[in-house]
Image 1: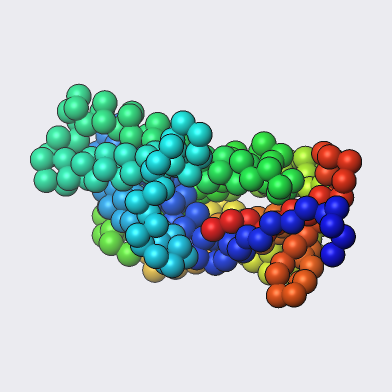
Image 2 (image 1 turned 180 degrees about the vertical axis):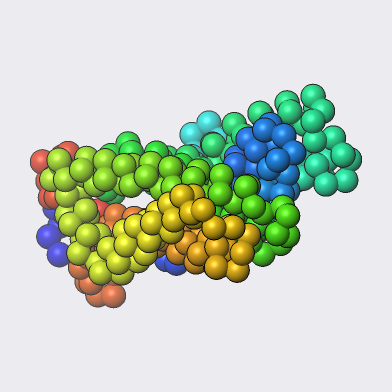
Length: 321
């Protein structure tokens, strides 16, 4: 190896991290939709209840996936240290506070019959702020990895926030089809299908803008080309995760048939599941393709930055655990 080349050994993020990012987005997105629906009255009571019960458990399961990737749960005690300088520490506190507040909101909504009280309304506003922070945090964390040009375009947090809203909304819709009665579903499901279609269109715009920004610069361009060259990403995310759910949600929204019928619920369930799978594929694709192609040297993995800031050829690394 050239002694002028700088190198550092790190580890590759895998599917467990993608699952953590996905469930974090689902939980925060579901809470945001549920809390907003809570302000709109009893007409959306079922979706509010389901969204609240999805929020903090999704974050809890995602945290388990993160701990499993760490290999040693004891390492988690260091995550909240130095929030002034570490985005991991800031995220630890944002997510922890969000989980606590969403849990309290769920208990108040379910057992205290205080849905319209001033306390719950104030709690909702504060918790929505932490939910948005949770959705954006993962993208901000990726952007803080300076050696990964694909993640530092500045648009990754926007993509993750929009995708979190979409997946959270689809999770609520799937829950409504599973636990709602025919009397409860009707008009509520048609309204939610229209919202879902609008959110998917917003995600399409966000991902196109993200990839367009990546193609404008030489460093992230290679990652953008790699992600678009992956068949599972193009088919799984763009086609099955965005296009098909958009078509199905529009069908439900404009249909004159009863949505609470078996056929209508099946369409909603399939569209919601595909949207959720697409959200997971998005995060895994961004993680994997954020790193440039690697070299295996004596069992270690390295990659070369396309345009290093220093005059020497620089060696980058795969993302840390």
